[in-house]
Length: 379
Image 1 (cartoon, helix red, strand yellow):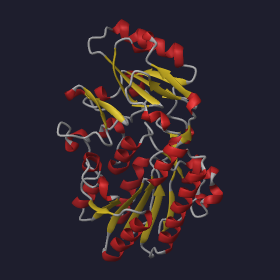
Image 2: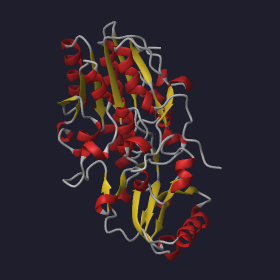
Image 3: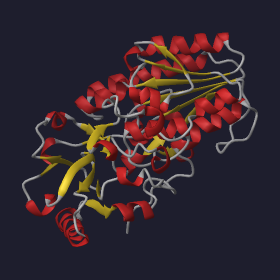
Image 4: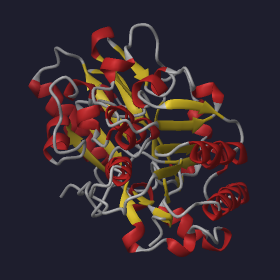
């Protein structure tokens, strides 16, 4: 039986649209009260399970974490897909960012959807849906994004943050100060603050490391101080884009030498915990079935191995997958069920194997994320 992707009542797709409704004085899916200004701090990689495991180091955030304040990240649990879901309020099957790397069919290549943008990929059409910021602008509500300066002009920013005013600020305290400055100067506003530091430490050292714990303490202190500054009609939500779990090198599954697993495979996309295999366009139905079965026999005991059609039917990429998005999804999707990660031995770049903390698949550690309220949004 395939796992359900809707494991919680609410998901990341509910957060920003509900904030807009709250500022407009309307009832959104989260039932937030009416405010003049809404702030969302999104902490990349701060899964609910990892946060609970370090509860003693997050005395502002952890006490609010419970079943009711845990939502679903969606699938795949990777930043490119999740942030597009967050800023559009739609699922990958609609907005089109279906993985960390994905097939660009028009140019016959696999692209990195965070950093691989170039002149052949148009952010305005690749990410297909209006953002919540664009919707806010149509309602005369100003919206702001606060993140590091280096991301200001990236293709990913143009794809998922269009409609918002971008404010660059380097450190976490500086980002919090920028958010407070915006609130002090606006009558109504939506403010999104992005914190990438915890995810970076997780990848390099793991979420069970002292380094991750130290970074969590910094995030917690920043939220504490900012929450203390909130006025009566200012609401704050703290959430994440996905969770994380540590994968030691001994748990790497190396493929690429087994002919049965790569027969007719043109591209390997996705990420180590959620491979998306694209077969040659002229691969016969028999060959496609044979490769799918080979993966099921080899890896079905520790991963969910499905065809594109099965993944779509199961709602993995959302209830609707647009016709022009479907080809971006692999012909075969291998989502890790156990604590493993897959690496193609044929790839010339093995730098990714140094990652400790990983995500991308459907485990509870990856899909369960916090949604914690402060100020006017406090429970």
